[in-house]
Length: 76
Image 1 (cartoon, helix red, strand yellow):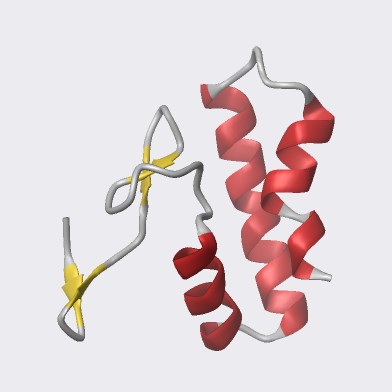
Image 2: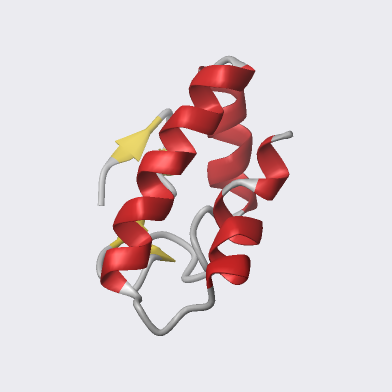
C-alpha cells in the first residue's frame, strides 16, 4: 500500500476491486474525491471507463448495471 501526504492511498485491489485501504468497493468515497481533484470531467470518465472494463473482466458475475453505477454514474 502506498502512502500519499500521510494518508493511505485508496487504490483498488484486483481482482476483488475492493479498496486496499478501507475495504469498501472501489472507487470508495476517498478515491472518488481524489480522482475528481486530479482529473477533468472528460478525463475522469475515460479513466473510469478503462477501470470498468478491467473490473468486468475480473468480476464477470457482476451485472453490467451495477458496474456502471459503481464506476461511471458518479462522474457526471
